[in-house]
Length: 515
Image (cartoon, rainbow, N blue to C red; front, side, top):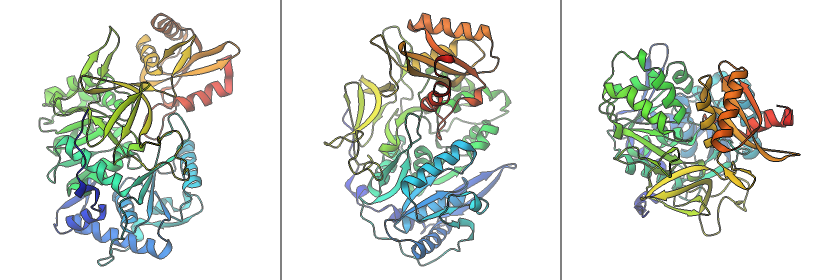
């Protein structure tokens, strides 16, 4: 799978140079859409630079080069300015979510303990909700017209991208300035994006997909970013579709569950022209052929081209981008009479190899290990490859992801991918909610087996019987335990994936084999 290399001029140009270039043109840069309304709040490129300089000035007064700066702010223009201002100041950004709920607070506390930030940039109404650290409200920082950018080496850390924790405790992937610009170039190369392209969506900024697509790539291109919050998407998924219709040529991205939610809501869409959508990326969690089909059936009457659907694959340790479908759109293949598998396309600007069924990646976008772990652990090989922990194969030049190495369930010497079991459970009964099922390996006196936590709208004996029979017939496996819970109770990571590790800890850890 020979890819094009990232050009040397890209790998030697500091990210802040693009900010300075863009400020020469008084065009819209970042637009935050709020509800009710909607109301759009926009900063032009000169305004972005002035506010970024103000942030950099304040950080230089309070921190030193090499210090980490946590960003715990609402998804608005302040978050954009905080992240870019930290890089402009030559400090190491730590983009995080707001501290909502037990899981959100635990994630922030874990990241603070690992990164030990010296300062925190936040929203004014969150000042009293943070771990003890010197905090600055971004809204209170005055713009600046003269502050110069820091001189940084391209190999210096730009930020720490904390992994979502779907299979293990979150860790901070060290993303260099070189890796950031490489990932931005890969995005623009794959989707033919330029300064006229709109980057649009709602994926969270603290997640690698949202950070690179909605903040990094617009700066790299001098393009416009238009965004709103994940919560506003959940309240009305069609807000995403309306945004795409308003901005022809848009590139957008979301996890697979969002495609299901939006397709289900299509009956409420009165009118929209989606014929000019550039690319709708589907990534960050396992991609279902049924979800792609349902999404296209729902929005084809509004002109959405099937070729605009771009299944893709990435991970925090690769900054974000690894592979994507191109102009051809989604490729779905059925192998040996099994379930249809969705290709995640080809790499751009990096290399892929398969070692013992594991996908490994090499390229200038790969992280420089994990923060505070100089041995680089088992994830980064001595010869410069990233072990993704994902299983897959290449067919006709396209990459297919089949599961997680750490999630493999081995019973009686046979390998079972949890994704396959989860798909069987979802199809077993209408009361089981899609993308709300976690299957995981468990061990007790009877050896290793499989347990399932399933989000269910109407739990009952008939549902449990249907699920157990389906798993037994489809996989020749008895369920060691089955919990039918409210759909919202199934734990998810910060990026929206079902967290099998958290489900195992919560149910099997507490109840053992008494489920």
